[in-house]
Image 1 (cartoon, rainbow, N blue to C red):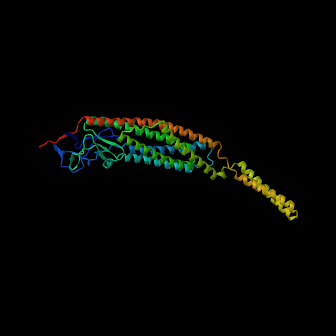
Image 2: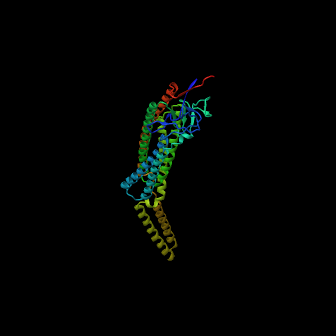
Image 3: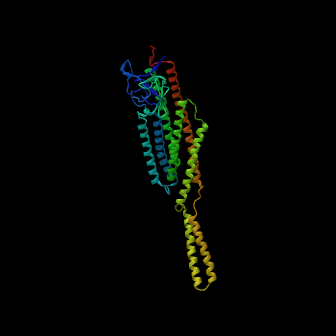
Length: 399
């Protein structure tokens, strides 16, 4: 019985590739088995190296998306702080810490974008993968032989398929790259705009920005890892688990609930820290009035006591104590937490959540459409490789 085996330099494509050209399988194992000449070694499961880099979608999408989110947050923080400064003045607004936070977010974002570019060019990552659907009984150089239908599961989540026909390989490479680049670009754009909105909703609050950025980065990483795992599962098991409106709304709502709780806690802390500076001038004047009144009454009580009018002195002293207490109350009276500015900030946060949800939902639909096209191409390759032999036939003859 003949089987379609694979020589070196056969074309391969990957579901995660972003370069619009097929690459080739390199030969790594020490060969004693060749096809017609020493230039055409036959390959086995130890041959996992690709001649160039596919420029993988997953690290590019993850790191560049995170980077652009942080860049957007940095810009949004500054815009939100300036908006507050223009509306209510700079009194109590920590412009210095805000500028430092925005700079840190921007630098971190640029670093993540660079990391995405570097990590996506890791051309040896396929060497940690595993070939599937190989020949179970034919061995080439003591290892199971690769077949036209074999696929390599990459540690980055992609599926490398063998396409012996160079024309078909170019067609699939173009389709893969076009859809993957669309997915990455749509994701990066949506993260930039969501970052802008999120950064603005901090409204110049340094503590809220610190906690919000920390939580936002954590939930981004968790969400993207889940998304990549889901795509890996669909590619390997062909299980369709599309995103739903309810799922996106729940995810967006969970993040915004955290944002609102963060903002509430930060506002309460800010009120506590800035209580003395936030006390109104009228409260300060009132406290000073009671202090003067208490001092006068204490002096009068002392004079009365010196003249032997102890009962009158005691009454005046009690009035002095009451004045002292009134002054203390006036100094310590904080502005109410649930004031107009609080509800304005809360409303802006809700509006930001709605905006971010709309952006995320639209981006997810576009990304899923691109990924569905990739899955369709993977199925087409599998069917074509099963029905049409384009590799090398090796026939075992009985003596």
